[in-house]
Figure 1: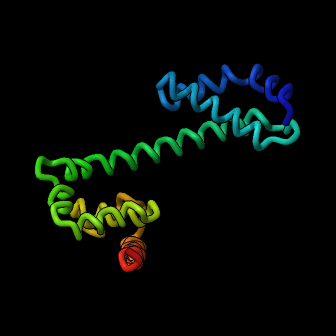
Figure 2 (figure 1 turned 60 degrees about the vertical axis):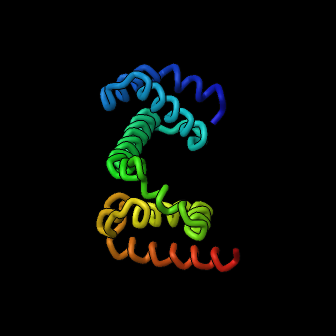
Length: 161
């Protein structure tokens, strides 16, 4: 899609799209971001002018909002557990006292994000596998498998050191 076509679409639909986004989120800044992201996706996805562009734009805007809500809900589930990391005598301070445990912690930080997340939640935050599964949006079996793989990678990393 060319810039002229995108500008034409923007001029034609941005106000309606903004009002729609505002009705979804009730936040002016977020609504502006949703509209901006919607037109960015249009720039990337639309090749020629489609017959139902208006409806496509509204659907993309709604999907972006739903993605935002999922992300926010996920962060709300993690926040109460983050307090466990910042108690005066935090678990992290206790672990870093001894050099061997410090090496383990730094090796955990080198893992890919899903492995790092599950090890942190399970060991450092003392959450059960069921709680970890809920936070990470996994089944209990999948979280068990992910924890096993994370431990295996951690063990390999520690052997290399």
